[in-house]
Length: 149
Length: 149
Image (tube, rainbow over all chains, first blue to last red; front, side):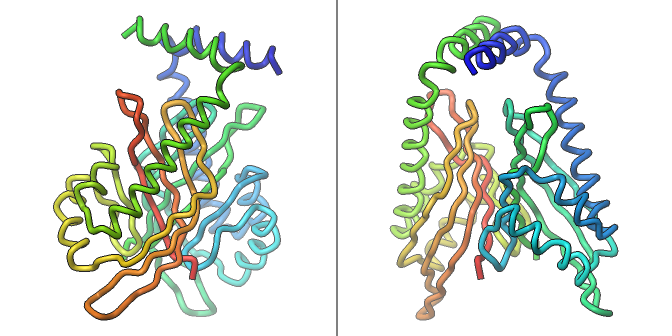
């Protein structure tokens, strides 16, 4: 643990003044790729791919219900994707800010979700916190959204 | 600038393994104090005190309208507080996580807001990002919320 902390600290000493921007750009690209995967998985109805984007301790905060953890998502999302398929989704991040081993993104999204034959259009905004995993990849840690209308 | 970065890096080397928890506790207390001030200012109808809690580049993301910056808040909040006074507000943070010069908080809140004689009760949740200011204090940088019901 001490070795890991010291290695991290030394890395910061060297990296902060020299390569922070380059690191941030690569982290921002990784998070943009998560948004691509998120919308693709939602429209494909691929609950497994969608759930794989979430940190094991992830919490989603949708409108109309209390916050729920990944265990609840794993139970409910496959059924929800099947019952209410999305025919379109577009996530438009306006910010991706890297904060060491944390990051946040904020922006807007649109989605078309079917309930039977009835299409429901959503125009919303979101704010999401990502946590860097031990292997350097990023996952969704906290996510909240609401309507723009 | 280089001097400041080096000083920050050296501080991290020394402080990370030894005093991170103590630092976090004092930062968490400062953010809890912001939540106290937020609910007190809202119920007092004190728009000036409420706006002072926000970073100059702050963005609020309420349900039902697009995201809006502090300039829009400064125009609209004094009128909104006068038109729709709150008789009660309680913010219950479930998390306050310090990420260097950034922090986030997540939790639930209740509020009673008056429209004329009609009281409207809100049971909601929120996620907020704070940015450390040059003087070491914290201000609200991004804030989004929605209903639990």
